[in-house]
Length: 566
Image (cartoon, rainbow, N blue to C red; front, side, top):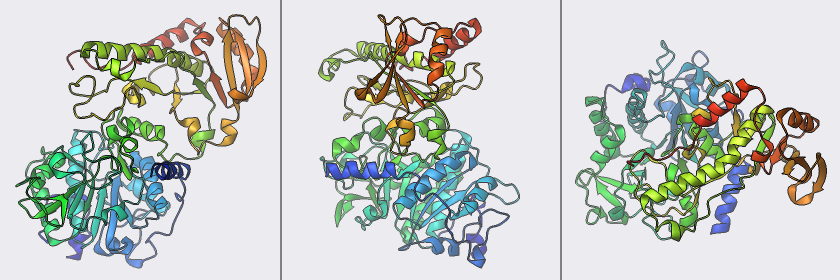
């Protein structure tokens, strides 16, 4: 019995066992300011002689390990391999900020296992000790691949394994960041056996209501990136049945299987829990299921695009990075844009920076835009992006010329980006999106293309909120030079303008590269150069090869647009 419980997840997959608005703003600001706090070492459970590290990595999961970290009979679990070590550090920092100690991180390879032990993070080995990895590649967060499907089976095996220890379980993907006291929230709904997030793109609730979604209106697919299981023999039986389905066909998507099972006999109008009408009875009336509110437990669109928590006037409790582009690089950038990714201190200080002012932006009123036909909507959106990107492309050239990182500015979008047809420029169902909206960078510029290592033109960048983040040191923010260009200026001149943060440099228009380098060389001690008119300052590279590399880079970073038939 103990040997079976101590097996790695990879070994377990093959078999089953029956066994108020101001307060909201303040809480988000505090979370951002404290990002990284508490991410240092802690004792962990390694002092227990039965839970000693193995070859520098954590032990395999066992009943004793689970109960050693559990608080109030509840444990929080996520997992990752070493390619996602920075995701884990960010996830742990946010969990600790809520005062949680009852979490475990599953190590999918020996390298991250050793990192987890070294940093005092309670963890368990999911890898075969003889192979050093779990058999799941570093792309397991990327939708649809072989690693994605294999990780799905391991996820369900994790749920079964921990429920076998007779503990309540919060099982979450490592790109699902805890922003509030989610465990206190879950305790509000004792009638639910399972609480799960949703891919729904609108709320069924009135503003200010942070309860569960209304079952009759919440028919969108449930998303298993955030799942809370209240322990019972019945809940364990459901998870075991779920794992049986996956093991019978390795092409079945774990999330589809969950939705199909949970909604067997589903009647969201008549089959509700007698004590809570927002909990529906699923799995042939044997399982109480609650759909977590999409404003408080948002996905990638409801959080990063719609900012639905503002519309619904509730606090975001946990955000899952779905509906995004650019693989893991895109996820990091989105979290950074919203200031919830835990970067080390050197991220803010190791470089020098250029930012640009977007002088041209689309401004059509929403009511006028919605009267356009779909073709004209898409055309206006692309026109607006090209207008804004004129400054961004010039900023890329300046950043490459002076070996600085470009702080990509906020960009306004009128249309969604989606892998399927849009409806009037919106993802079907996203009816609460406010127009225009600040779009994530991956809506417009491909993060992977931005980091293209094959290009001879080096381009480094930071997210739009870089200087707004409370973690950006004041010494960096205050080391700012604002740069204007003027058709009337005959030579560079310095000014001091309080509204622009201090030092201002006015440059003559149409300076060539050599002249620009000469003038700005004396200001290289400033950490931050802010160009008010980047297209006016950047006139290209004098070296033909460099100019060609720049042109090719810009051509590969044209705004991403929805295909004509979508």
